[in-house]
Amino acid sequence: MNLNKYLWVSDEVKQALAENRPVVALESTIISHGMPYPQNVETALLVEQTVRESGAVPATIAIIAGKISVGITKDQIEYLGKKGLGVTKASRRDLPVLLSRGEDGATTVATTMIGAALAGIKVFATGGIGGVHRGAETTMDISADLEELAQTDVTVVCAGAKSILDLGLTLEYLETKGVTVIGYGTEELPAFYCRKSGFKVDYRLDKAEEIAAAIHVKNECGLSGGLLVTNPIPEEFAMDEAEMTAQIDKAVAMASELGIKGKEITPFLLDKIKTLTEGRSLEANIKLVLNNARLGAAIAKALCSI
Ligand code: PSU
Ligand code: MN
Image (cartoon, rainbow, N blue to C red; front, side):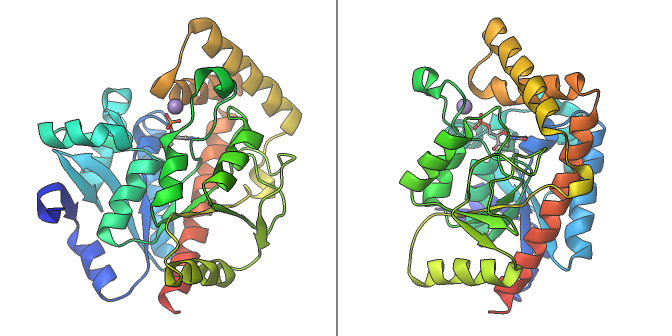
């Protein structure tokens, strides 16, 4: 790949990587499509600050004017947040046209992994990943995030997956693709807003150093693909399971009534769930992203000292 033509990396991130200092990648679809303005911009900046306070360099990734841009500026974050749904949500399949036309795009987990890998970043923290949607046996709606985890060597720290997805099928898919699912301090897959899901992770690891050791061994063995680290939302911010199940079911029913599908479905559901919980789901979402930023930084630090 002609790197300079399609990839831009900030000086700060370049220097940190060159000096083997920890860097944590951050995505931008969560800014444009995952949260409303202005909370999206406030959160994105707070996440960057949290990564810094935890001793790593943040690298928010987006597509700007046809370049996969790693370590975008505060102004660019503000621009993506204000433009919101008007920015193209860019997954792997969107890259050829966006880059050739010199356009902008907000990167999903899949494309943020691609950008991170190209820049040489090993750890990426976010809120939630895409997965196998409920009803996928007829819609075939399976996020490209899962295929990316299968092939691109970046560790993704998330808060598990929310039950807008079929969590059981998502775990089966990850197993088929050889993606290790780690629970940080938990045996149970966290369900984003809630700490429990009723499903088991592959391995419980209690320390960032243990996670870094697993990543290191995977690299040494030349095993391709990412690792998925699931980090439960802190107890004090977790939402009631029965309430969330009921509200998510309502939101999913609305989406199916309105015939919403494809790339629109996740942003639609997030927005509906926010309204149905009177904004409380957004508060929980912000807290869990910050929690993941801290763990991502700890893993990146531990990796640098191996
Ligand atoms: N889940 C969230 N917030 C988000 C997303 C998922 O709680 O913002 C975004 C992420 O960018 C993820 C994408 O990669 O949605 C998945 O979309 P799709 O299912 O269309 O691949
Ligand atoms: Mn989809």
